[in-house]
Image 1 (cartoon, rainbow, N blue to C red):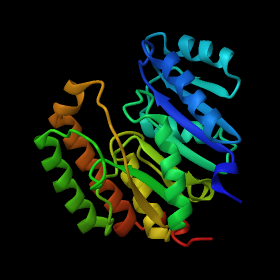
Image 2 (tube, one colour; image 1 turned 45 degrees about the vertical axis):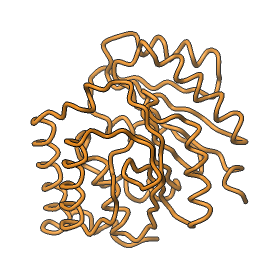
Image 3 (tube, rainbow, N blue to C red; image 1 turned 120 degrees about the vertical axis):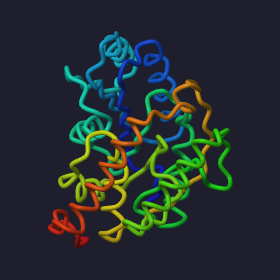
Length: 252
């Protein structure tokens, strides 16, 4: 069966995106409707303090494939993605950042790479040689250092774990999600490191990324780096010292 004929669940975590979430949801719906036989969009409102929930519900009234999940307190992107997955029914699941710095039409590219490489997971990579991203030098340096750290700690052969577009076969998330602890900073690393360790094949995909918030991207806070580092070391501790993930370390 061609991948394009499988139902896809697109999970979009959102926090205080009220100014743009209606348009972004409708845009995503139109792209998926043109491209895939069956789809659903699950917008997870991660404790927003603005009108994100109301605008998302307005979009769902226009397109019945849009589902809105709300909870009151901000719990982090990782928690939002896990919550969204609990409402998903697709054979394939995509994670897409709600700001649409990466256009949803690029999901189709991930599909084609999954089909071509027989991968279980395909992730967008800002540092793929064919990607079109204007990345500040400071961010490139930080990402290079982090890439080296991830390879040393987990033998994770990926150039980028943080881009806001990823595609999974549902079985991968069913297997890995139950043991995921991180809710915020190193969530993607914990998820991908466990999928890699179990033996799932992960492929990288070039992306086109247009930053809508230049200051957010260029100005990396020390606090964010610190907590990301602490979370990453905690994952290493759980994986290799506590052997916390071993109950799911064998692929079914």
